Image (cartoon, rainbow, N blue to C red; front, side, top):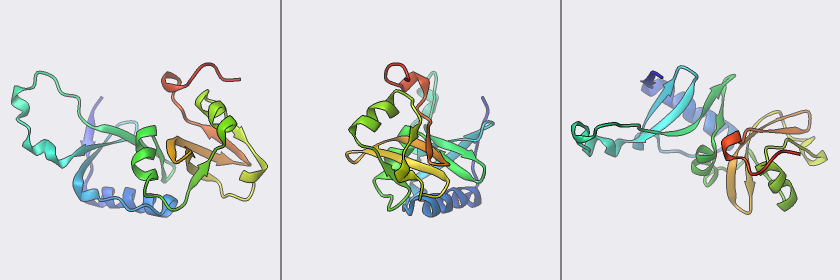
Length: 154
């Protein structure tokens, strides 16, 4: 799948989304950003410049951090771990029972979500981050990939 490096203007727009949704500071100067044709966003450290890639037979570079969707960014599990530790808002903390259901790829419905605005949230439990969910009408949809879900959903 083809990928293209993002121009500085596009990277600043992503950083603005992170600031608006999560009030998180992120040093964009430390990374190269690129996206594929599905609008999946990847990061790669600028230290890649120090590696002689001519000696590598095969290379797969970058960390998947999320996907651009509808003018927002849905963070991957790794993306939520990078951004979540600096986020000051946009986090939904799950209790133990909810967290176990979340890891089984279940959507969450709770009256405590009713006063929150619709959109993407970082999902956490005990100060650990487990990806993103989309909140709409009091239901937090799970975006845990099937390959990373624990057991079967209920």
